[in-house]
Image (cartoon, rainbow, N blue to C red; front, side):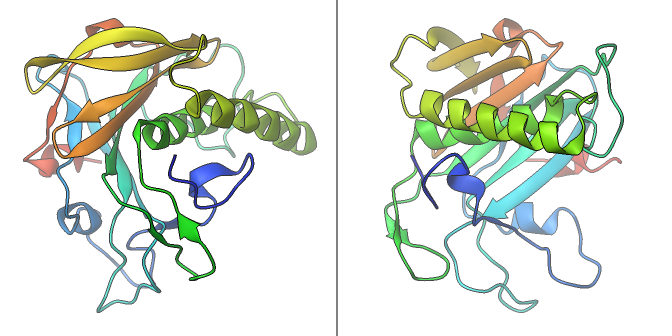
Length: 230
């Protein structure tokens, strides 16, 4: 796993959102600057598409002239998950599928140069997808203290599961990637589903709710403007 830190906080603890410096920025810019291909759902998905976030966890300090290099990012499909500040209850019927693309990175130094990061793997994609699902589906009726306890508990579980993709918490699933069947590891919970695997040039994760994972297919996204229609 790409462990930027240890423990339940996982690989995103020290990651920074690319393009987060002050001033207006083209939301497509961090995607277009990445050195790996982006993946989304294939043409079988006819619904709305939207940009997620691009993150980096291993480069030095980003500036307007030398932005951070992307390590991973997301492309969304369907309803955008509610922000954590939004009130939600059991009647929340948002339907979405989010694809997580993770660059293949060897072991390298951390952003603050205080440690070494492991090479990325399918577990990296599984962890990012699992934590993304948690952020999108936490119980909205919890108060702030209980919500944090819930997130800590569930994040620790997601971390352990991502580290054991061959374990009993996962099942096998074949899905098309650029039209060719590829093996993925898959799991369901009451909050939605998560899967992780590989694709040409990258590692892939995905998470969703209200959308069947069994009917999804992935493809490279050469035209990212279709995701920028907010």
